[in-house]
Length: 430
Image (cartoon, rainbow, N blue to C red; front, top):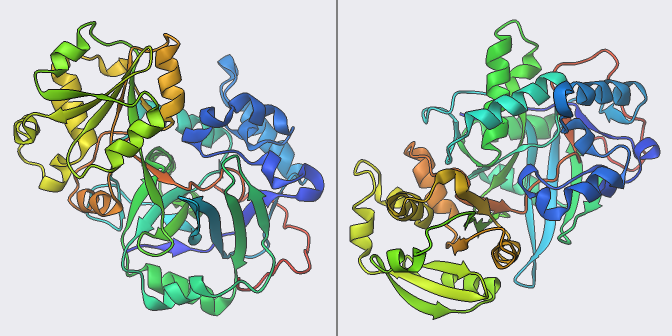
């Protein structure tokens, strides 16, 4: 089952780099949504400097930056290994909510469906190779793999429900108004409890399939002679049933589409006029218990697409897959709708921000936006346990852990210096 180890957390020294809100950044997939350029210029020490490729030099500059930041104490490491309690406070439909979990050094293992770490989405080998180049140049886990479990032991829930006795090591508010807070869990008894409790569980990757695959490829490339840290990756583990994430839909923006798209869709769907506002269209989809899609065309034209025969659409899907997999709207859209319509997969972009995607359609940068309903954490767990990956970018879990708040060194350079003593920050248990 899950092999989670404590680690020496790496973070920015605020006395050198400034506050965490300017040095950190949104999760990988959300960076564009929240203005990449603004984050690159917010601070000379932005974590994006460790993620940027520059022309023919690739990630060489990122590696040089990391070396320099270690030596000048921009980055510091905790002196002793620990787990880290991570909380994200947000509003869900106007009601305060918290996502709470633990940051750990997770032992890597193949994503073959037989181990303790399960995948629910496919990965793109090209993206893995690019991220592998970055990791080799700048060996630092800057953003955790976000994973979830079910039926966590009572003692683990009790530990996470225990109010912290100290102020957070790191605290920041992000662009969405979410508050991020991290505490060290360093008490020997708590560390033993966490390791034992997690060893009874399996986890499903919620977000970070490419990060995990990259870490696995890096470990394989180094082989058994590698430093033991290379056989683990930074992970954020949450209980999906208690203080867990919410799932948001991932829509499909069509950069090009057949001119007679509506006529072609009419063969399989009844087409009803719908709201022009994409957010209202999303709400209409969420209210439905049956398969339904939204369609947004230029000039504010919105539609609801209801299958004429759901069973007939599912009949186009692979027959060896489970009912849970075959019931996911994004699966039906990809395999039973866009494919038969002849839509080029390279012209389809996943988008979580429906309003921005609709603006691209209205502005002529895209032909159409197809909106889908979100799936559920229970379905994600079921297909993962069956070894039936969903199409890439089917799910979007929120709130996501923020990049650069707490990191982990891959390897242990001799110049990784411990953090200064910080009275009141709590070096023991959170």
